[in-house]
Structure formats: C-alpha cells, structure tokens
Image (cartoon, rainbow, N blue to C red; front, side, top):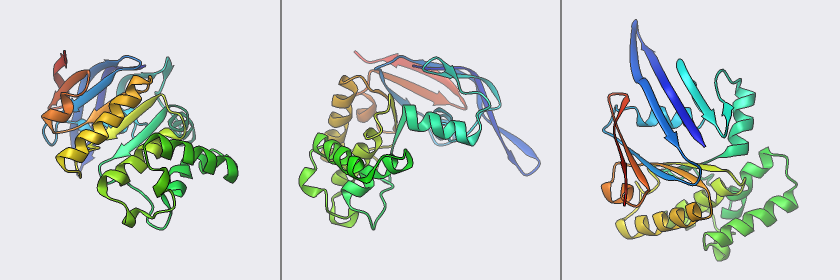
Length: 225
C-alpha cells in the first residue's frame, strides 16, 4: 500500500539546511496497523506530512497504492488525499460552530456530494462510531473521547484506504484512549490501513508493528506478536 524508498527531506533555517529525513526506507502493507515512535525531532511529523501529501520530499520515491507521489501539484495532491487518505489529529480539529453531523459531512462537501447524501452518509458513520444520539451536538457539548470519535467518523466518511492518525489519544485519559484504539483496531480489521504516530508505548503495543525513528532514520522495526 505504502512504499517509501530513500526518502530525504531538508528544511532551510536561515542559511543552514536542516536534514530531517536521511534516506528513509519503509513499506506498509495493505491492511496493516503500524505505530511510528521517536523522540521530538526524530522526523515523525515530517514523515506523517509526507505520507499525507501535506509536504513534498527532496529525493527518493513514495508509491501509494502503486502510484508515484513524486512532484505532485497541489491540485493532484488534494485529489489523492481525497481518494486514499483520512486524517485523525490529537487536537480533533473540529469546527466549533458545526454539529457533529456537519463536521463529519464536511469532506463530502469538498467532493461535491449533495447535501442530502452528505447527511445520510455522515449519520451512517456516526452510527459506526456509536454517536448517533449526539449528531446535533456542537463540539463544546462533547467529551474528549466523543470529539475523537467524531474526528474518526469524519476521517472515514470519504471511504479512505489509509488512515493517518497523529497522536490520536494524546489528549485523552487512559480509559478513553483504550476505547479509541479499540475502535481504530476494529476499523483496521475491516481492511483499512492505519499509520499511528504515538509517544505512548502501550498504544504502540496495540498495533501490528512498531517503527522507531531516530535522527531521520528508522532504527528499529518490530513486529508485535
């Protein structure tokens, strides 16, 4: 599903070039659930931004579902994001003045889906995450766990093949974290490929593999048994 070969990425800081990813190689198979770990500055966020087509790379090759992602225009990147990728963030990124249903439906608006169909599909995915009764609530009327479930429903509504989750349990207590990971694991069981960035060992242990980054390179790639 995902193949990264010799990926390099640098950022300019003043007159200096800061090399963040240094020839990184990584393959994620379809239907796999992979955790990415590493200390601050190891390259986790940069890697996730490249996987999510939110940032480009300097050298190497990124193949997503058999198609090269090199040199994409913003329009093309947006098309691939819409077609293949769903995003879940630590801070939920919900729009405060929209209801749970409206937040979930939002990606479909950008795909040109009619309002009626958007709402039907949004309710379908709210039901999937157990929040049918909360569809008309605003984000400030929801708990942290409920907000993350809305965010997961929003990530799912476009029927992506890959979900990229950036610290999805970082703002949650331990019980709610386990519930959210159980939901992600269940969705993974339905065939969705998951890449989860986390700094929490117990969260990483719930994934199929743990990839550890250090100084822009993969130093450990462990299969959980």
